[in-house]
Length: 441
Ligand SMILES: Cc1cc2nc3c(=O)[nH]c(=O)nc-3n(C[C@H](O)[C@H](O)[C@H](O)COP(=O)(O)OP(=O)(O)OC[C@H]3O[C@@H](n4cnc5c(N)ncnc54)[C@H](O)[C@@H]3O)c2cc1C
Image (cartoon, rainbow, N blue to C red; front, top):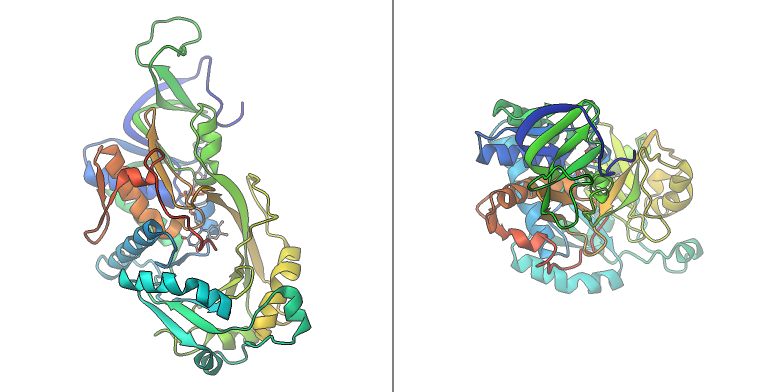
């Protein structure tokens, strides 16, 4: 039976009953469980995951970067409060998350800069700290970077325009998704939260509100709700099920006719190191760590992420048109994709990468909300769905957990970290009116 198909026929009954059952021990499911349990210490909350440990899905594949610079105001709010919370966990609670504020640096052509000017003004008014670097500054600070492509035939072919200015997001940087997942897991357990690994949810259990014992129940005229999940080791029941299974969410929900409203798309990361790129890594002047920020090149969303521990960079790209929406259980990175798609742009802007090959590579999938690329959080038939994180779930996980906890408590507004709040229904389906996110990397 495919995952998510409605389970019919006899199943082993464990009769274990919980108040809340979360499907998925990625960063989103763990944050949901943590916030629900913190607000309701007496509830029996359990998280199930088919993997053997926390955060083994796309949480482990992530580039682990964060930023509060988005085109959608809601995405800015979710990420900004999440960053504040992670900083609080590290600085006040003493739980190391490897958080470093290296910044995000967009290298922009004059055309791109002009397109973004209005956005820069409006985010500044909101208090988002962004700095504009003049091209002369960039030239002085980033040794060996190519900025002028005028008359360069190869650059013309690649569609690379000359770099006009740099835009740096200051409250941006890198963090360890593993450590965040561990934090939520450990703290949930301390409060009495339960986690079961190696437990795959085969399907959701749909039942009629009042069973009559007629064959084929639940029938279309009966009120019904999701009452539990089927696993190989038996059924587990809960008042509320939270589906936070990232790119697997559709598989689980499709079988009962609930739409997760996301599509999976592959993204790849390549890890590179060599003395030549170490020099680039140690670029001074942008942050207190004296490393090049997470930098986005002016073509195809190719980015380089400083990896101080490995003394190199992780490289990725905003893969879009031409990359199919195609679910893969275990996507693999493609060396040719690095060689023919990313490398020409990368080595053109940063000759430091010339002839350097990846030492490691991996791939995961974004669960893309194709409508507006903001998360979806809604309740239907006893299931709360938290999906569509669209490639920025690490930085938004804390806010998403709080919104799910508020939705569970039937509150109109969710309290986000740092005293800010958001109307829960804004992330839902029927009252949704969010700006389209254009900064998906
Ligand atoms: C290459 C790449 C780079 C990224 N870079 C960034 C970044 O820099 N910053 C950022 O914020 N975000 C980034 N992201 C996105 C981020 O990784 C995701 O948004 C985030 O991890 C989603 O978390 P999740 O908990 O929803 O999903 P996951 O971490 O995938 O967790 C889902 C869990 O559900 C479990 N599961 C699935 N099906 C079942 C089942 N039937 N039964 C039981 N368990 C099940 C899986 O085992 C998995 O553990 C990146 C993603 C990728 C792929």
